[in-house]
Amino acid sequence: MASYILKAKKSLGQHFLHDKNIADRIARAANVKSCNVLEIGPGPGSLTKSILEHGAKKLISIEKDRRCLKELANLATKYNDRLVLIEGDALEFNLPKSKDAKLKIVSNLPYNISVPLLIKYLQQIDYISQMTLMFQKEVADRLVARPKTQNYGRLSIMAQSLCDVSIEFHVNKKAFFPPPKVLSTIVIFRPKTKRYTADWKSLEQVTRAAFGQRRKMLRSSLKTFMFDFNVLNIDPKSRAQDLSVEQFWSLAIDLEQRINP
Figure 1 (cartoon, rainbow, N blue to C red):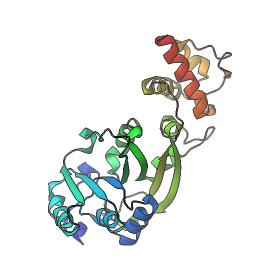
Figure 2: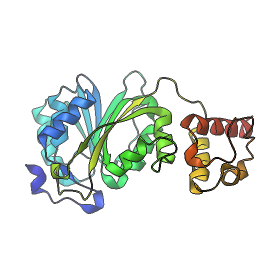
Figure 3: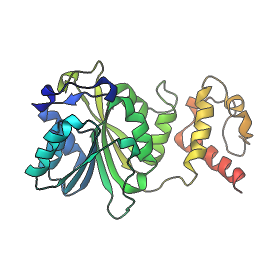
Figure 4: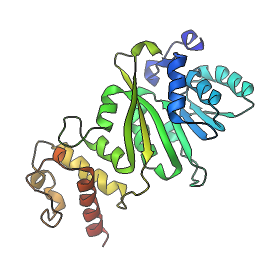
């Protein structure tokens, strides 16, 4: 397998998926048949091949490591150019802005940029029909965490405010080369049809302040925003982890309305 020939670069957060059964399972979970798909960091192409085998109409793969491009180019030839390769940094790539031709994103994300990439795609969710992504298990646990739990935080709120988020399955360390030190988890994001209208930056401001001092009561951690908690039906003695996603959005909407009346 090509993944064993290449030495993974720690600087790129590389752990090459080599278990075909897992790659096929991811492709099935993503339901890629006849869809336009985006893959980040394909490496030597194990998941890439499974996505194509499962009938993706078109697959755009963004790879920063030039060593992987030759193997990927061979796949592009084999699959009649249904595979489009882009050499570059995924963090600098913006999605095509078409609500009529939405993408599915299916990726074994590089661990070192998985959260920044997710935030980037959440901000472009209008152009995405579904995301099937692999994270470290500890990140996955934060993504699906509920209020009043230890893992609940800004990432939980950002993801759950825009998508229905669910864990699909866990992946053993042995499925990768080199094996990571932690378990990995496949998470599916299904964009909500009805979403909140406040500006994303307002939500970021409120959650950053609240969870930056998560042990403090909201009346203290959010003091600078001058919220009228009674009007918002929120207990000012609550702490950040006590509030639901909906309550955080009500704070964000209130803040935006007062900034831009």
